[in-house]
Length: 455
Ligand code: PHE
Image (cartoon, rainbow, N blue to C red; front, side, top):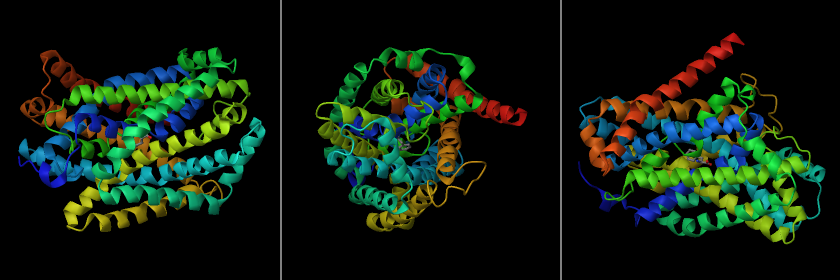
């Protein structure tokens, strides 16, 4: 297989790949989505299923996805096609890449709306709108924002422009410098919030909520949400990690690198949960409040801590950057594919893709105001995009990746790419990828459908 490193560029080191992949993985999924879905699904049992999905389904497929990208060295569509052909299989496997690019768009549409909320909150925090405010006032602010399509459009547009500005330059140029500073600072700010949470008096209660597993509170819907979120938070099943893998140096170890990424991602989500729930309980808020949870809790903390104006601003700035570095990877698969397929410039591909993503986003933001009664299957457009991508498209993408890499390509290819030094390491991975990951996805899908028909 030709090695076109020199034409496409690659990360300057393994460390930079870790940062980029972590930048993609750590985002709104960890800080915004994880706490609110834990709240909606009753706590500990959900967290346990989620952790099991990360370890047994997510990590093996993550390694498979990166392996495909590094082997193929192109956009996901063409990487999958070439690796399948190399193994003597059909080129139709490239459908994985096409489905992934579509999923990326759909996620981008609602993701950029939430990122827009974060931008708005950055300014609220800096202006001192939270200072001394009680939780009623804070909830009111959030409702006001949602009810204002014009403001939402401005913030959403600002975010789309920020993302496109990096994607146009090529991710491995624009991104490297930013993430070196971002990731460590985000972590420090989360620890600060955690310290505040310790002072609320509700820390113990929130630990029980997060870690006591009462399975009677968990439905099959909840299990599917946990599985879907494992994919969502690891940026898995849609080609983002594959495209980043395609820039990964040949000699780096896929296994240790990606286990590191998965651990970092999980730690950030758990810390976010441990920072948010004490504030929820201390202010008698509802843990099942839904997508607004982060926006009605954390400002209370900033409003009441010393230096909260500065920390609040910094925190939302960090979340904005985390969302930014994730959103970039949502569009990168589609952009690289368009450039290769239609031989157009990166800039032109970016403009098309940015426009489509932006337009879909308008539909998502209307779900909170003018379009709140456009319902499909009882969901507004925002919830529908979230449901279809995280709970259906990403697990399905991951399932086919597991089948392709686990069953259809020759082990010599995967052995050669993974170069796991211990025989056991390879065997464990191969076993999980062949038997556990795809079966878990199928079982959860089927159980879910079954329980829907029953109910
Ligand atoms: N992993 C990102 C997050 O948790 C979202 C994402 C999903 C990014 C899929 C890229 C691909 O916020």
